[in-house]
Length: 365
Image (cartoon, rainbow, N blue to C red; front, side, top):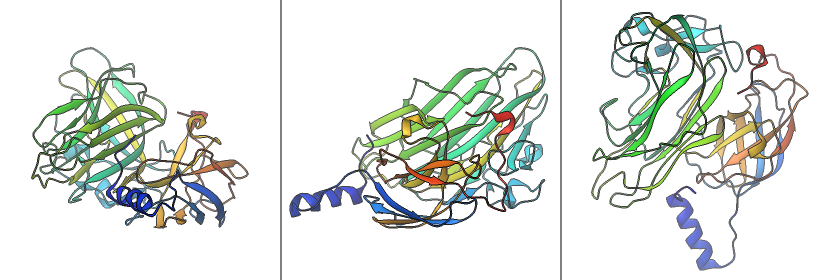
């Protein structure tokens, strides 16, 4: 269970004092607007809670950019000036939505710095990050030190070495198997709380959704949170973590995207990695579209970026992704504490002029 937000605490206290209001998980009662790619829907219900900044800090499916567009022209930044030959770009080889995604190539015999593409100057107390990734081994063979994919990092300044923060690292071999991992929340005093249990991994040759929620503790109080998921399966579940000492004013200032890897340390292997539907928000309150009527039964879920949010009404942009026209999909609303409606609200996908072909070869994560 996530630590309740300050708003939720105040709401609960008000309910206790008034003794005339009830709080529960979000409930959807009506949806208006065509559920078509790029359209806008209004979701009506109750228990959605507050979301002062409903629009994400960053969201892109990279469809509006020509093939070859550098990552730094899609609203992302070169956080450490390390791109060099590892400049990521928009590519149409693989995609989970539409026809394009962001690609980076880690070439043979490359021992250069990590590219560190992402967002800076955020000044957040909590952050939610979601991305779809696809990666593959492209050339070479042999043993040696494993390559490193630092999937997502978020931290205070300076980039990469700022604390507090969190990170998630995988180390694959040339066969596409992930043979080592490392994931932790790190406090402002550099104390790491490791998430050693891995229930799911983003293996090679298929699209996988990775997502993270990180909430700084109240200074001097052990109530920080770090959670992570792969394809909806929970990996990290760290709560009651002392991330800020008393008097600390540290904030989450940087989010590094999954494009932060290195191909090898002295042996000849190369890899490519694609990122799609990259989403960064200042809260875990969000709307998702899933393929089943209950959350545990969903095999795929896609974030629907919100533009307005109140306790009883949400407006969101539709991202149909791999759902073809005529499909029944299900809407879910997550509040700021991660509570979600137990039953998905059924909607029918409507045809749009914006194409969204299925995942390559019918592979579903």
